[in-house]
Structures are given as C-alpha cells and as structure tokens.
Length: 216
Picture 1 (cartoon, rainbow, N blue to C red):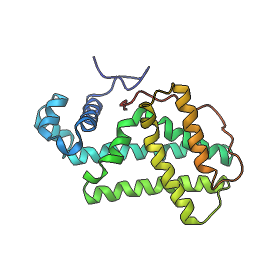
Picture 2: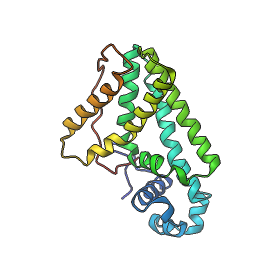
Picture 3: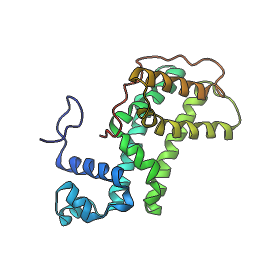
C-alpha cells in the first residue's frame, strides 16, 4: 500500500516515499551513520537508481531541511492578513502546526545542520535569516519595544523553542489539550517581556500536535 501524505490526502509519489523513508532512517540512525548503500536498501531501490534521484546523501539532507524553511516562509505569506496581533499569533501557531507534517524535518534542521556542506549551510542560514526577519517585523508591528539586540535575541530564542517544544512535550504525560494550553502559555509568556500590552489569541486554536516522529 502506498504511503499517504496525511488523512484524506492523495498517496505519496514514489520520489516522496523515498524521501519519507530516508528522513525516517536519518532520524533513527543519525545522518552521518547512514551510507548510501544502506539508504538504498532501506528505500528498496538500487544504489544507481538512488543516485539518479539524488546526487549525494548530503544533497538529500539539504533538500529535507530546505523544504522546512520553504514551508515556514510560505506560512509568513499565508498569515499576512488581519491586525498586527493576529498576524503575529497566526504565524506562531502556523509554525507550531507545521510539526504535524514536518517533525522530523525540524529534527534534521536542528541536529544535522552541521553535516551540510558550507555552501548549503549558507543557503539554509539565509532562509532562516529571512524567517527571523519576518517574525521580528511581526513583533515590532505588534508593539514590541526594546534594544534591537534584545528583540533579535528574543526572536532567535522563540524560534528555537518553537522548533523543539512540540516534540519535547510529546514525551510528557500531558493530554493533547494540556500540551496545547502549555505551548500557548509558554509562547505568550516569552513575549511578555517585549510586548507590554496583552496579546489576545485570535482565530482557531493551535492545530492538535501529531504523534512524535510523524513527517510529511
């Protein structure tokens, strides 16, 4: 049976299935410990066929991290309506909800970035910088005040929390609704130091978190 992209979605293409299985193997074993031969066996194709799809294992890792930041930047565009508070909160909730589809991509981005070549590291850093700048702009529009270094550090810390928090909480004994409420409390609390007026949660609640290890 073909892997499904998600509930109610079309089956994944063969290339998408290969990427999905490779992502699972990298997360389970660690990128550096997986050879191309092992990867080919895991995804059930010949080594030559694997090189036809991906020029190298490192290139595949780059693409898996790149697609995460592409999705985050798309979320910036998709949450550009509403007032300043709605735009800020909408982006934060979209970031958290992305763990539904990209939890292992987040893991790769945080733990395996060092395995990328210097040119690919530079490209990912540029994408992350664009995302940080977008979130910083949302903070300023929502009334954040303080030295620029403090605001930039707040954004960087917030992104680090958002990248890890849903997966960390999957290991807790909390119910889904309790995890969701705790995430809201942590995120909003982290912003109280730079945004003095209360931020009101607008629109739908955070999308329920997927089980740990789910990917898109």
